[in-house]
Amino acid sequence: MKTYIKRLNWEESIYLAINKLIAKHGKDNEAYNPDNKPFAVFDWDNTSIIGDVEEALLYYMVRNVSFKMDPEEFYELIRKNVDRKDYPKEFNNLDKQRVNIDLISQDIKRAYEKLYKNLDRFEGGKTLEEVQDTDYYQEFVSKMLYRYRASEFDPEAEDPYCWMSFLLKNYKTEEVYDLCKGAYASMKKERIRVEEFVSPDIKSEAGRISIKYFVGIRTLDEMVDLYRSLEENGIDCYIVSASFIDIVRAFATDTNNNYKMKEEKVLGLRLMKDDEGKILPKFDKDFPISIREGKVQTINKLIKNDRNYGPIMVGGDSDGDFAMLKEFDHTDLSLIIHRANSGLIDDLRQKAREGSLRYYSQGRNLLEASFVPSNKSEGYNE
Image (cartoon, rainbow, N blue to C red):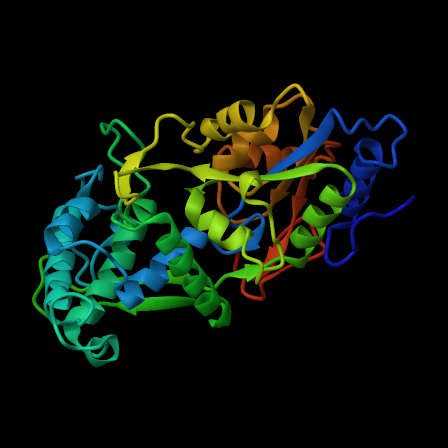
């Protein structure tokens, strides 16, 4: 059998199945028609890469206080479309008391007001380095990351709430790209780890909290090679992400990264912009909201046409990808990156374990930032 992808750390059955897929649909097949090309679609976060681009950007923005909002704008945004009920008990403060968005948002606002008053990028004269040892900086960082982990979407809100994307309010697209490139370059230098943040012992509404957060981001050699091989063999390769499109494109199309994808083949959530091109915390309803079933809608509306067919291969890692992994009759291979998450995706993992000829599970080692040649992940598996 001719091979098209590098062996690397692919699980054996997946390696064989991908090579057969490319032989069947690619240029080597005598029936290949360049006027009716096949295509493949993949999720981005924790599928195409190790880590999550929005979570990496959030970490970077919070640590560097890289926001373009005054305290009132910021306070309104961190409370927008958030469930007001108490957080689950696992998010109790260190005194074992329940916490909710009303309490935590007041603490974040108070800390942000002090940062806004003191930092030279806002109204003050101090550098970031000069405030990093202060209680209010440490309060801000720990409780912002805690708020991300603890808060849930308000079920009565009209639209899903993609908080990390909305935090880019008042940024322009070119500014987002510059911010992301700086963030990703920084995050790739970070040691892959799970870091614990504990808020300082000061008077606050929510009390002292502790939260663990995954730090780091890496490319995956197997996925880089897969996308390259698909394209070289006449199979168009697309990304459909639930992250904000500018954030994903900044990484996927960067010539300093291995993926080097074409911008038009990287799709994701789209936000409205004002007359000056500044981002607004509102979805652009002219495009599908690429969350869960919205990924299928995105494929149907923005990728499928009368000059292609597919997706012949789909890749994902979570319930957010469940619909597109199983929806399309043209799909020969559904690749599932094995994680510790659960939900509807468990049904597809079970099919993979039972020897399905469509569904396959690929293991990884998150803290070593690599695939492992197994259908199950090893070590810490977020």
